[in-house]
Structures are given as structure tokens and as C-alpha cells.
Image (cartoon, rainbow, N blue to C red; front, side, top):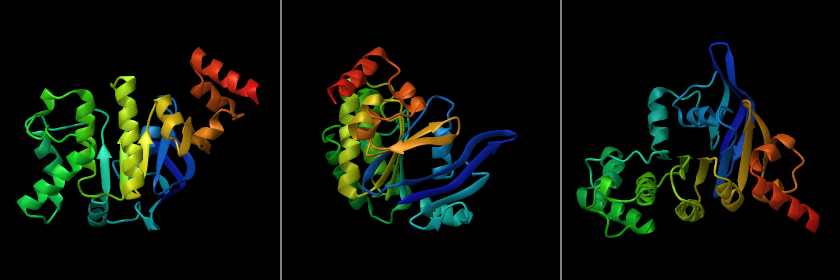
Amino acid sequence: MIEVKNLYKNFDDIKVLKDISTVFDDGKTNLIIGQSGSGKTVLMKNLVGLLDPTSGEILYDGRDFVKMSKQEKVLMRREMGMIFQSAALFDSLTVLENVMFPLDMFSSMNLRERQKRAMDCLARVNLVGAEEKYPGEISGGMQKRVAIARAIALNPKYLFCDEPNSGLDPKTSLVIDDLLHSITQEFNMTTIINTHDMNSVMGIGENIIFIYEGHKEWQGVSADIMGSTNKRLTDFIFASDLLKEMREAVTHQK
């Protein structure tokens, strides 16, 4: 479990995060949503240590990440997996070598053990047979699946995903959503996803945090959204005419 307490982040005189307190649950897909510039990316960067908060606490199973020494943070990051918006694969490495990269860097396994672990991860994301290909030879959806395999190679307790469906078609996005959700449950990870994808919100949003102008405006589950009376949330979620019609139809049925 990750617990955030009274988190603030300022850039000079600009307050980007304002007194955010929330809990990200184990074994669930925790989604951070909000408009561009709302602060959700800054929040994630604070969670993984790419930025230091101005004040507040970030507790990983009771351990205060903010107060850790540099060496303690390095060790803590070994418990984290990260999936970047662009997949961020190494073009000069094969799919297998990309997945092995964190194992080469941080594990004490021998070469055969590292190869087996990487192949097991590729099998988990249905990419057996693609291990000798290079990133430029596979589709965008396959690249995201390689990124997921790499992110889980070290069996992390915490998985962070920055816009994992960016640039993907709707069908492939659903595949990635289902994969992230099933892996989260299978390994009982604390998974945190930054997303604009409303299909993800409604499909796998087990714990949703809506950030508005730097503060936590709303928190709940996808089933609560249809009946929410929070205007800022509904304006964001139901921005399209189609979604507005769907919400009105659900409301009329009650």
C-alpha cells in the first residue's frame, strides 16, 4: 500500500500539488485522472522519486520515501516497475535483451536464470516468438507489452504506468488494460496508472483519484462515476456528447 499524506509541490511561487492525501491499494489498479496541467504527472514523479515534494509524506508500506537517504531510495526503486508513455525500449537491443536489462543491472541471477526469467515474462504478455526481434520490427501494441514484461521482470511490489495506452488503437488499448489488470491481481501489486483513456477509467478503475488544479477533487470507483454529483468530475469524464448521452440513459433507467 502507498499512502500519501498532505503532499505539496511548488515550483518557485507556483503551487502545483496542494495538500493531496490519498491511499493506493494493493492488488488493485489505481488510476490518476485529470485534465492536462492538473498535476497528475507531477504527482507520479513525486511518487517514484523523480521530483522531491515541497512537504508531505509518501509512505510505502509505512516507510517514508521522502525521508529516505539516497542509497535507501536506490534500494526502494528496485521494488518499483515503470512503464513509460513511449514504451522507452532500447532500439539496439532485441526484445529479449530489453526485458533482461533490469535483470542484468539489478539481479544476482546467472545468465541462464536471467534468460529464463525474461522468457517467462514474455510468455506472460503473450510474446513468445518475438524475443529475437528488435523494437522497430514490432507494432506499437507489442512494444507496450514488451515494456510491461520488462517492468515486471524484477517482480516489483509497485507498478507505475504513465499513459500506457497513448498512441494505441481502441482494441489494442483494451488488451493492454486487461493485461495490466490481470497482472496486478496475479502478483498483488500496487499499480498506479496515469491516464486520459475513459475506457480504462470505466473498465479497470478499481480506485480512481481525480486531480483538479493540483488538489484531490474526488476519489472512488468506476461504478460511482455515473451517479456522481461532482460537477468538475462529470464535466471531465463526460466531455463528449456520446458519453453524456450514455450517462443520461443510465440516469433515466433508475
